Length: 175
Image: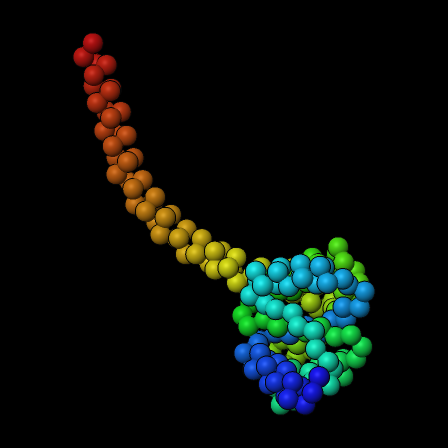
């Protein structure tokens, strides 16, 4: 790689990090290209991406960003996973991937400038995702008006049942 290529890689990583809210540093040693490609596809579905980069270039790219604390973990073969939005979805993908491919080793994750260990990442993956939380909130919001309508409709309905019972009673008295 010549100097111009290195500058381009650093600029690309820097721009990617500028938009990211979440990053995971992992060691991919021992994984084959088809396996990493499958991980890339899985992460893409959760609006994340994984990049393999040289540690020196990554160090330059993270300087002055909220991801600077991960500097001391950039050793050996390094892959970085970036996520712009919901950090839970990519965390779930990585944790599930590690269950079938234990060669991928999580070194550290950074969320909003705070370091997370591999155990923290596993805990994060157990949380409900943004879409699931939205669905739960919507269900709660819809439950209140639905219950209110049921209560309001029960009053005339019970009155109707009472009138029907009186009618039936008078109708039986005539026979």
